[in-house]
Length: 438
Ligand SMILES: [Zn+2]
Image 1 (spheres, rainbow, N blue to C red):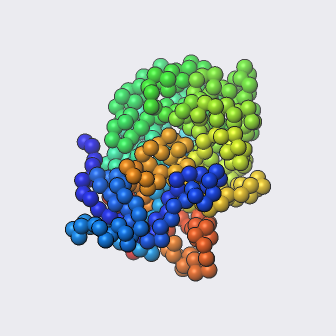
Image 2 (cartoon, rainbow, N blue to C red):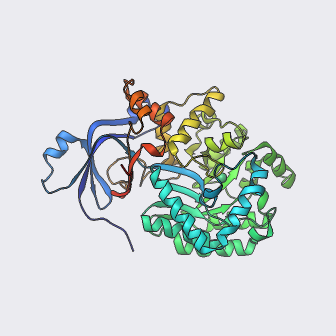
Image 3 (cartoon, rainbow, N blue to C red):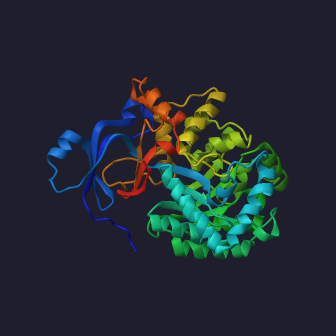
């Protein structure tokens, strides 16, 4: 059933959203209303403007939710996360390939059980909302029922979710392997069942090139081509050991990225996590094909993978979003992802302004997923997904905020010190989907 809250209502508070990338357009990219109102009807934004002008012409019976003292921004967009890894977040001591063997594969095995999948999916969606994330692009597991469980949980909450069944037919335990044929057939059935149903979108999901046979890679590219509007998500060039392994497995390819290219997996709505160990030919190819990079800073630091080059991606015109990559990532909080993104870029001799960071978490993320016609800012007609941030949620934050003068300083403190404690409420299609206990 289509969820369409009919009521006309208004939200009042400090509003901040982006209309362009601050790296391209500077101050004109940011719209800030210290006392603003969002008018929402049928779950979509019908107006956004200063409170004094808007409220005076609003009929008295229209309900107004008053969030003055809080900062309202578009909901965060997490472009890469694994819902089945919720229970291994913060597991000690490994880099990528050993991490998969030791932690990931055993925990993903449990998703053969639909009841387990449903329980984790519900927790996962609630945790996203608790962190202000309203759109996520998620890996399920190899089990088709794990996709059903995640989509059902997202659908119940009216969340925008992009997800898919992992394709993996080699270099993995037998209990997690599909085959090229079953992976293709199961994915096709899931696309028919879920893609574009309510707010749900399907992503063809080869885990990464080493765990798919050539036949499976061919069929993954075919699924992507056969279903216009469907996404494709995978991993590329995360870790140097992984890159060396891909060179052994696919000696004919020019680079790791070129493997995906050869199997027709680069294009609009293809999203690749990490993208660390690429060269400029790879980056240019991603830009030319419209493929997206998901920058996953907490994961890249935690697994010791490497430092993402945001400046080079931007110079070459590649779309970039931010991902938490839980469970390799260490937090569901996009604020913490921004905090760590800043540090990764510092180590690379690059800077990330607070405005640019929040752009990447909102409109930039929406653009990277080709969803900016529906979400990402407060423009007329957008879906009214937003997060209400309490800038003084903790004693330290309150104290530090008292020493800030500019919006940029306040935003930087929020992303540096903030986490789920800062999220006062999260709204989906205008309706409150999460509220902090006070
Ligand atoms: Zn990942």
